[in-house]
Amino acid sequence: MSTANLDFEQFRVFLEKACGILLGENKQYLVSSRLNKLMEQQGIKSLGELIQRIQSQPRSGLRELVVDAMTTNETLWFRDTYPFEVLKNKVLPEQIKANPGQRLRIWSAACSSGQEPFSLSMAIDEFERSNLGQLKAGVQIFATDLSAQMLNTCRTGEYDNLAIGRGLSPERLQRYFDPKGPGRWVIKTPIKNRVEFRPFNLLDSYAGFGKFDVVFCRNVLIYFSAEVKKDILLRIHSTLKPGGYLFLGASEALNGLPDHYQMVQCSPGIIYQAK
Image (tube, rainbow, N blue to C red; front, side, top):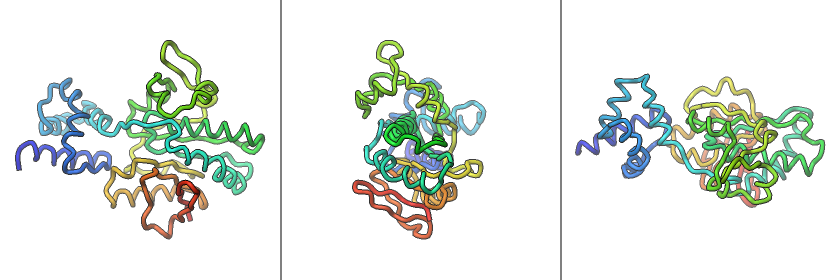
């Protein structure tokens, strides 16, 4: 095996241990595109040298920068549309009925640059507008991501025209955002204040999270091995109240775990209810 291939194998092992992501054997191009700029800035010539530097200087912050670069993904407002409609038309009414007078809790796992939790907050607002008085205790949205840098961006609630253009309707832009200088927008305070952001690695302990009525873990499990994926799904189940719902990505399916989850057809879309 060539030195470059050995370096790549070493990097694959590092990334899976660090955050669970399983890189395919032919993903050298992805690693190069994500890390070239960072390696150039740090004066690092190869993946082997990068791993050596991370191991020899554990407090340098380089490990976190590499994981950030490899896990930051593009995201959309109201991605795939149907999950947010299912939330408003089916899940919220059911959960309000099952938990009368209680504040509902939603977890947006791997929230990236914040579009998913803020879309959820807007969907909650739309539900409240058409169902006055039903959500008296309110809703808390708990949003987590591996990238502390990304979460700092989320907390500002500010987006440029390019980000705004990815799935946000003109009506929602007008209702939920204020202009913040040329080509920039900031989400309105009531929508922003419903969301609490916290750094979290899906491989870590879920013990301090409490219980959720709904978990959105969309378009992230595809990056994990089958074993890690199953482990995460079991741990998510431990955070869901009985009868709570799990939303996965449109291209993701929950195979197995029949003792824990029941598939619910929503036409369109499928969600999973915790047993």
